[in-house]
Image (cartoon, rainbow, N blue to C red):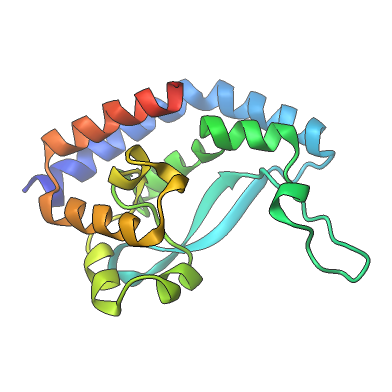
Length: 185
């Protein structure tokens, strides 16, 4: 019952509260980002795969520019990421607009991070992806508290599948509080 009904109600309640509390931070971050990146295009929208293998548009704050070389190819990620973008990623402030995705029902607060369609095709088996997408993706999950981007996709998928098979209120609380520790470090 928790995974189907209660979790969604808690997601709505806490996402609304967090969005209201974080709105000044989001707006201030957007303003500073516009100045730092010299553009008003501070929102980044990307297709990700969610619940039931359905695509949705994830909302993030832009952390990289679209700068290209003389041949029209995008520069490397590190060349396109200004210091403020690095700060946003390190502090996870670029993820705050995803609270809107939680309210819309595209995401949950806790669950496997949503992959891009290319990542779904590249990592894991179709069976693993079906299981992984049998619940809503989350803002944070087991993989994020056990290494975030420092772990490979094989380990991410293992953590994600463990979570899907063991989702509970207690596990969600543990991940939520551990995430707060990781972000505040």
